[in-house]
Length: 244
Image (cartoon, rainbow, N blue to C red; front, side, top):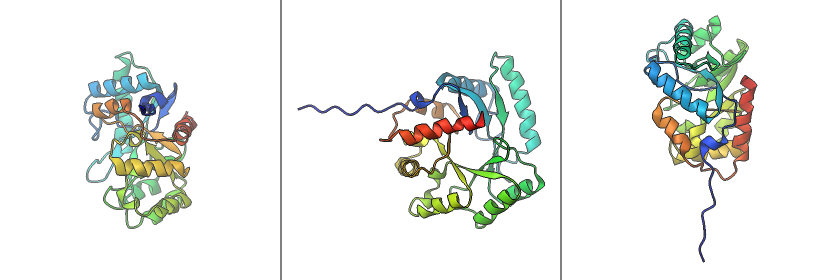
C-alpha cells in the first residue's frame, strides 16, 4: 500500500491581497537590510507580488551599532519614496523603527522621540543572547509614557524556549507579539519553528511581519509551512489589517 504525504501549504500562498507588512528592512543603506535602492526596489516588488499593498518599514535603532534617529529615518523614507516613484512604484510606505530595549530606547520614549507603527504602537526587540536586566521596568515605563509595546519575533529568543511561562509574563505585562512569517517554514531553525507553533497554538501571537532583509528571505516564502494547524497563523495575518 502506498501512502502519500499530505500536501503542505506554501507560505506565500497564505498572504492575502492587500496585506500590510509591519516589519521589514527596506530603506537602503541604513541597517542590515537593503543596501541600495535597487535592493529596495527588488524587495518591494517581490512582496507586492505576494499580496502586500502597504509597507511599514522598520529600520533598527540600536545604540552603538545602528545609530539611527527619527529624523534620519524620516529623511531617508522621503528620499526612497521619491526614488521608487521614479521607478513606477507608488505603494504606501511609512517608516517606524525596530527599537532594541536598552537605556537609549528609554531616553527616546521619555522624550517622545519615537517612530510608531500606528498611533502609540511601537516595535521593540531584545538581544538574542539575553533579555535586558530591567526588562519589565522598561515595559512598564514605556506604557506609562503612553506607548504600547509590540515585541518583534518572540519565537526567536532562545532563552525563553525552556521557560514558556516567561512569554505569559510578557503578555500579562502588556506586550503584544509579532511573529516572523519565516519562522513558520523553519527558516531560523527547528527550535524556533517549534516555539512559533506553540505560541500560535496558545493564541499568543497578535500580528505577523516579513522581517525581510534580503533576497534569501524572499526566496524562503516559497517554502512549505511546517504547521499542522494553519488557522492561528491565518488569524494573526488577518490581524495586520489593524494597521491599515
